[in-house]
Structures are given as structure tokens and as C-alpha cells.
Image (cartoon, rainbow, N blue to C red):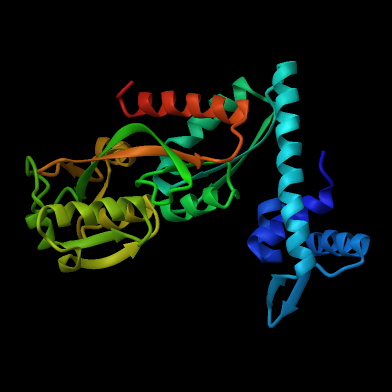
Length: 302
């Protein structure tokens, strides 16, 4: 209901980038530029300084930014509360999820939630846990589902369920028939790792440290950005990796990979994060309750 020009300006001001704002708003960059130009003409003042490919708010822009935040916040709250009074569950839901959760848990969950609430429009961002956390903190996303502890004090974190990490290897690997494997044994093997910023990478690194070993001593032969890529590479016999047990159920059943339990076991929480200060709508609260229950069921902890 708020002025579209104000919404576009506010997004650009938050991102300090027309390109990022366009991606977030699902608009073209020329359309974003046009909306901001219209607002500048309305106020007869420049809102952004443009220099060397970068933008910054002018003093007038900073003033408009302050009021835009209040206006848009009140507008969103008004629409949400009116919808709650009329019993309508509708509107956009901006979700972000770390790669493991997005690929192996969310597709079924989102389908079920959409069936229950067909007027809700869900937009999904997939990235590593660190990126999702940052985007929730700057209000680019309503809610994040991550694999690592939240590091930002402005976020509320709600643990959903536990997820066990295991070592995987090809069926012909010398450790494939082990009843369990220690971190000391893994240190000596060629290792395929997730990228820095990944929740899986963070937990694996901390696991080695807790076992009095340095992650820098791992024989990392490759760093990859998704569980699917890691499974494919490990399946060739090039080395071992540590992944969520939930991601390799199909491959283990088909005999493409072997899952070997870690000794000691490595269990991590999967969590929801959302801003502490932001108004929590009925839609967001409903999804939080739904996602928590479904993730517990999928993890076998319900």
C-alpha cells in the first residue's frame, strides 16, 4: 500500500546498489532507476551521490531514508494486522536457506505450505549460512534456515532439530568397511571440503579443533560449494568428505557412496533465524511453527 517509489528507494538505500536492489525486488535495473528518479523529481532534490560506480546517500537522502523506514514498517504492520482480522493468510514470504536445507528439506516443505496457504507468495534465496544470516539481519529476508549458530546479536535463533554429520567415501575406499572413523584417520586422507562460510565447513572445522587437531592439517584436494558436487566427486574415489547424513540417503541405498559414522559423533542443530526487533506477522509465525515441526519430522526427532 505504501508508495512504490518509496519502497524502491528504501531498498536501494539499504543495499547502496541499484543492481542488488533490482535483484531483491525482482525488477529490472532501469525500472529501479526510473522509480528513484521519479522520487527525486517529486522532492526536487538528489537522494544519491553517484561517483566511480558507487552510490551514497545525500543529506536529503538520509532524511528520506529515516522516514521511509518508519512509513514502510507501519504500512506492512497495518496490512498484516488487517489481514489477521479478516482471517486471510496472504502476501510475500522472503525466505533464505543454506544449501543443505534448501536442497534436501525445503522443496517438500514449501509445497505443503503452499497447498495450505495458496495466497502466500514465497521467494527463496539459497546461499551459505553466513550469507543468509547477514541478509536476515539487514531485513532483506524475513526468515533464514541455517546450519550453523547465529553470530549476530540482532537475530533471534530457534533450534528446530539435530542433524548428524558423517564421513562419506566411495564403496572401494579402504575405510568403507569401518564401523567408525576418527578425526585422526581423516586427517591422513585426501579431503573434499565445503567452502568457507558454509555451516557444514564451520562445524567440521570446529570438530577437528575439539579433537585437538588443526583443520589446516587436512589434505584438502578440492573445495566445492554444494553437497551435490561433493557427493559426485567423492563417488569417483578421489577422497573423503564430511556431510549431513540427510543428504546421502539415496546414494547410500544405491551403493554409490558409503556413510561411515564419526567417532566421536558430530551432531549439529538446524535453526531458524529472524530479526529480534522486526514485527513478527501471523504469516511468519505460522511458517515458523510449520517449518519447525516438519524439520523435526524429517530429522526423525519429532
